[in-house]
Image (cartoon, rainbow, N blue to C red; front, side):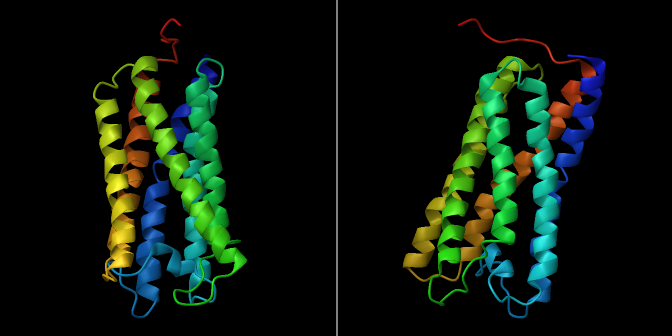
Length: 223
């Protein structure tokens, strides 16, 4: 890979690490603007639900978050598209996830809790499920491939699997919270979100350090 291509990769990776911070800023700001909102009780999607007050600035921050996080996908595609099909797939999944995140905050908002379900609300639920699967798949792919393709990724597989396990913990807690009517839906959701958000900070920054030290090299295992 040319030095010029390498030069573009590192800024993309570093910029993408700010995406999760934009997401957290949107949640904190949205919660502060909405009277009675509880981060323990209420889901994040309710901040941009149909008819929600203050939804526009929160949605704008979610769009910024998605755009920044999408730069990670672009960096992966630039670095691996010609030498590793699995990491290319991970890049495509993350790019699709960024697009879905924008759609969830704008075109397909959540129905207000307790209101009749609409086609838009159903689409929101479906996209959330697809997005979660895309995130998990991309993390698992990266966990397997990056230690093979790059130096300085020792322990990355275990770290990534721990991330997926924490995501699953939050995901499994959600139906229990709903079934028993516990006021902890927001907490369960945030366990999942914080799990993958920290991964989307740590991983691009780690890869950016590798890019700075040496260009992309082909370390694929023989078939």
